[in-house]
Length: 139
Image (tube, rainbow, N blue to C red; front, top):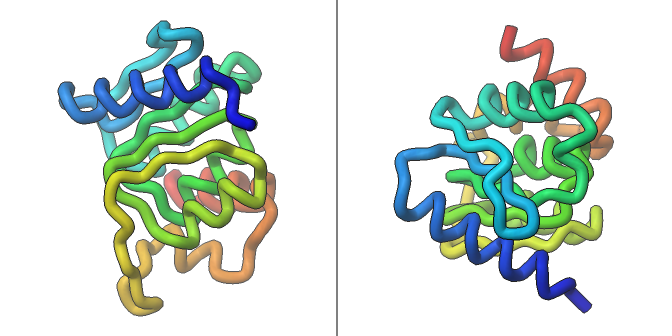
């Protein structure tokens, strides 16, 4: 059973992503902890690094959920994720990790259309390993 606070914060994240130009928002108990504009994975890694352990148990609102962003959210130990668009792989990885997720539109992505970050993680399932690989890739 999903916690009522998690559902409320996911709804808040959905509203914030839809009504602002932010590409990422971090919410907990109906409060915005961090709000940023930027490029997907790079911005997510920056926020994870800036917040450290404070990101644990929060809700993340992002523009797109794919394998790389899902593994980073699991690495950060967030409780929930909202994205307007997402892939089956991203959603499945959150489910496996016990992270509540909401995606408005499911996007079909063929292997040749994967992001360069998802291609880097082709055989990776570990959130910790994904973080190390993606952090190195954005430098």
